[in-house]
Image 1 (cartoon, protein in one colour):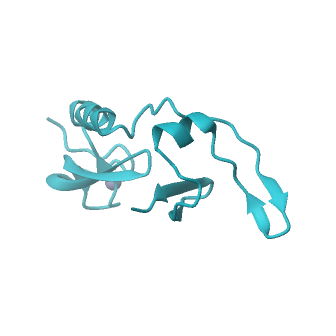
Image 2 (cartoon, protein in one colour):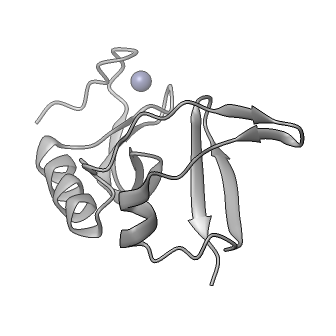
Length: 114
Ligand SMILES: [Zn+2]
């Protein structure tokens, strides 16, 4: 097997077991190869598929609940209305505490506090 890096074309790929694969904002540590020269990491397609399977099982991949909502303005700031079906399926009471994290440039993660 060739160890040439597709990015910098140097023969400096080594096998590692701590390559980082990002799936929908979640990070997985997997087996792969890393280029000692440019630092680029490569994960085999097989390993990538395995991660997608795991991500599916965890419900973080291909999540069907992607709904479009418009933000609205209230006197106290920007309001995001939670769709009724999500409200029901998550048993929201309406005064729940939530944690909002910014993921990357255009994603927000809303976690319902316990
Ligand atoms: Zn390289």
